[in-house]
Length: 394
Ligand SMILES: [Fe+2]
Image (cartoon, rainbow, N blue to C red; front, side, top):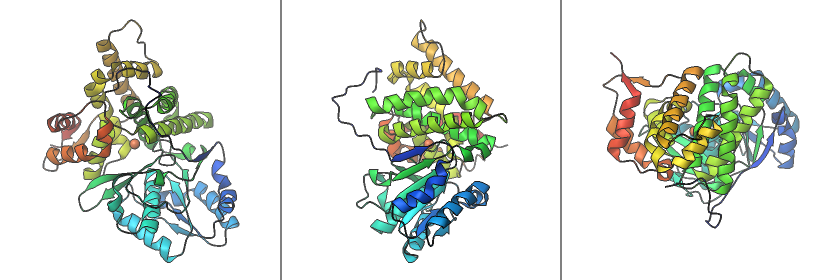
């Protein structure tokens, strides 16, 4: 339980981040950095949607002028699959590549991390599920994100779908922290508004879960709180047609701060349940988190009331003079309003024959993110939360 907002600096904690370059046109530095790394044949990992964009062409041009040859692996799909990681790793080895450049949202970056693991350590990608199961560091990995939320570009997490079981597996290791993140706001201007909303809510969830995590530290708290403030201040402008490059720079920064916090403090029940839900029904990660966030806060609040009060303050809510019960109600109302204003429905729709609450709850309880939730959940409690967010088709 994390009951106060102060930290004990005597407790052992680690904090790992990559080299990070931020700002307008950071992505265009890729050529120079490939030279710094002494790259001979990079493998670009992306998806077909990103590859069609003008911005990708600009980055590819920079790469092509700085190395003699490179290959593109664009077979990554949303919620990247174990099979995609395995074919990417085979291609990397067959083509004698020596560095990986991931360009895209969370899916290409997670898949790139998995390609890096298998190309060096061999075996099957799911062998590395869990915490610190990777023996050898992979080839250099450069991430150039095109969304602001997943933070795979700064994190020690890789999420991959186990296609035989229909469940997302988390691989957590310092060895999947990228060597370099080139974080550029330019591609964020082209993100569709719904994707912007989902990724922003994902980032907000990262920050909130990191701040109440059992593994938080003084260093993660600073970044988590700043992320909550930045995202709450900028999310509505970011999901409007009138967004500006300055707003998207703020969202980029909010996402990085949230990423540095959760990468080192881990997450909680929202992510554990979202991984299970998104894995079984192939749903967008940010959407699952957005829908679950309020319900998990409702469950967790009394385990860390001081911390949720601080979160409320960072979101611009009045807390002084209010008792915990009222602060909790106001925070839950704010999150509900936030979902309405950014256009995310507060439930998912399934055919009743498809719903498998027992399996969903079992998978969520096995997810490593569940371990750092500030309150222990029993299986029936997890099922109850799922019941609240699932609507059945007629
Ligand atoms: Fe996430």
